[in-house]
Every structure is written in structure tokens, then in C-alpha cells.
Image (cartoon, rainbow, N blue to C red; front, side):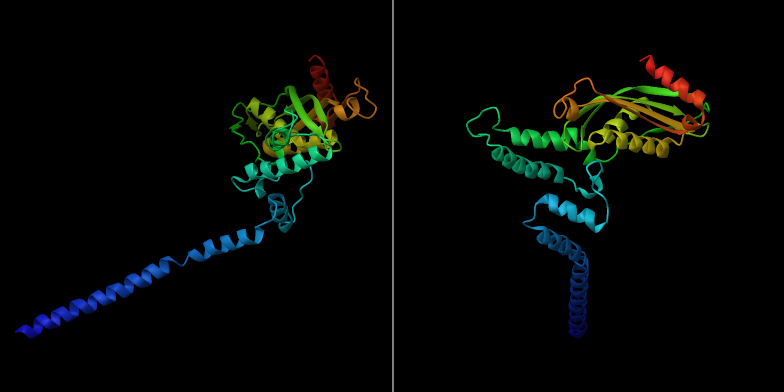
Length: 272
């Protein structure tokens, strides 16, 4: 009668072994995704010792993308890297100050200038290069509006690509929506304008870029943009003519084809 007990014990031990084997296989299988982690670490090892700016540049070049002064490169910057880029720019800005023969050790005014300048460029005046486009809340044109709307003057702060000198001015935006156009909040025009202008820019290229973006986003019948700005590369240096300004315009769709609409837009912004 003891034989069945031994047999049952053996059966139990055999089942235990099988269970252990299954458990081991399952654990081994669950470790399979670790290859991805190893691959990521390998990529980091390849980049080890390289300046972050070089790593980002390689990502852009691998996608055959453009990275001119007025291009946005946010898609190639990973979370947390902007702060590291500030560190790198700060180091290089310190080298610039030293090459200008400025004693940043004993001069209390310039002791942290390199970092302040780095933060200013990356997080403020050129921030439009490094952050994604502001999100736009679109509203359906329920009332089927198709009358002229003018937004402005919107304050513009930028810098010229040639000398990195300030550009300070104003922008007016005219929109003629169609009955099927999407509508966006008024504040979004200011946010989009700031995003485009917060980069090293050339004024005539900047207004075209802004017009392209608005046409794509809201699909109006017409878009008009007028920009009036002071260029410190002319007022602060060079000819030092502080009264010179640059005014330029972009007319699209109905504003280009209809002289009466264009005249109405220009007449209304003159009052401001």
C-alpha cells in the first residue's frame, strides 16, 4: 500500500521540476527585451566624449534635415538635453570672454556672464529653435464668418542672423476666413509670431514663414502680414543710423488678388 504513496511523491516532484523549468523559461523569455536596453546603452557609448551639440547635429544630418539659424530643431532634442546644452554653450561663451581679454575672475560684473548669456540664447531669445510649436486650439467656424480680421500690433523681438543684433518691431496680421476655415484664439497669433521670431532671423524670410504657417493651420481665403522693425545691426553698429526702419509685407490669396481688400487692410493698420 506504500507504493502508491511513493509514486504520488515522485509524480509531485516531477511536476515541480516541470513547473521550475517552465518558470525558468518564462523568466528567460521575459528578459528578451533587455536587448533594446543594451542597444540604447551602446548608442550612448558611441556618443560618449562628444559635445552634445555634435550628437544633436549628427541626428539632424542622419535625417537629412536642415538646421539653419531660423529653423526649428526641437524634434532632434531629447528631454533634459536643453539644460545640458546650456552647460556646453556656457563653457564656450566663457572661452569667448577670455578671448576678448575680460577678467571674469576678479570682475564681479562678468563672473557668471557666460552662463547668463547661454540661458538667454537657449531659453529666451532663440528659444523658438529648441521648443516645439505652441499647441493651437481650433474652433469650428459655426457662424460661417468671412469678414476681414486684423490682429496687431504684435510686439516682435528677434535678432538678425548676420550679427545677432536685436530686431525690435511690430507685426499686423490680416485674415480673411472662409466659411469652412478653422478659427484660432487671438492669443495664438501672438504665440505663433513669438515662436517664429525667437530665432536668428532675416525679416523678409520671417514674415514669409509666418504667412506659410497661418495658411497651413487655418486655411483662410487670404492672409496679409506687415512688419515694421528697428534693426540694431544698422542702428548700433555699421552706419549707426538710428532712424532707419524696415517695413515689409506678405499678401496671399484674396489680399493679393483684391486691391480693395488690400487697401482696406493697409488703411486700418495705419490708424494704429
